[in-house]
Amino acid sequence: MTERQRQILAAIIEQHAEIAAPIGSVMLAKLFGVSSATIRSEMARLEEMGLIEQPHTSAGRVPTDAGYRFYVNSLNEVQPANPLLIQDRSARAIQARVNNYSDRADRAIRSAVDSLVELTQNLGIATIGDELYMNGIGNLFSQPEFLQGDHVQSVARLLDNLEPWLREAKPTEPLSVYIGSENPVGKSSGATLIICRFRSPYSDNSYIGVLGPTRQSYAKVMRLVRQAGAMLEEVI
Image 1 (cartoon, rainbow, N blue to C red):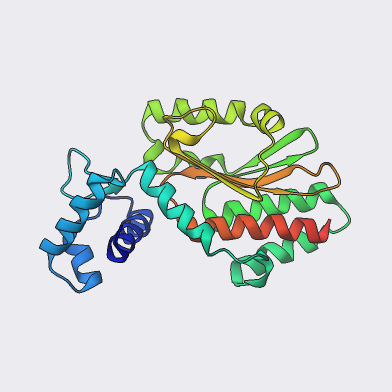
Image 2: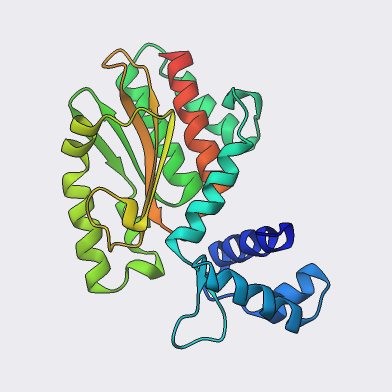
């Protein structure tokens, strides 16, 4: 893949996350300062690679699960070793709420989840002992992807099985991203699960994260989930 193709794929993913609609060549041509024909040619190559696809009703393109995976892998390559080194307003908001409960691990974890819900507009989850705390289900089902019955049922199946799956699988990566069909259950849900493992008084394998559509602002959401886990380890 050429560098321009990488940049075009990233632009399609990032623009699609913002507008929840297929991305056309005209928009990208303006962004890259080249002709629409050039963009269409590059999009055809990306489509041949299986990284983007064309919905039946649109001339634009949307990312596939494989396209998202390629993009997420490239983000992981440039992640800082210490997620707390990058502090913006969103990270400071999580930090402030977590610090309020430095003597109450359960409240600190809940407040970190609630912050992620507000900042990402996804559903937030965390393990607290043997329980799974969840908040923001209204956010999840207000997304345009989940207005169809089949997707709702598949997401609900994923949520129903998430706690026992985490308990059994115990993902070992500091940050794990399960995109669409990569999910353990509800493979056709069109959802992405982003979870961070952290040490807590309850377990060395505690988890915090979010569940939302595959149409995510991955760079932002992955960073915030990493930071939430690191802050909880530091405070509790």
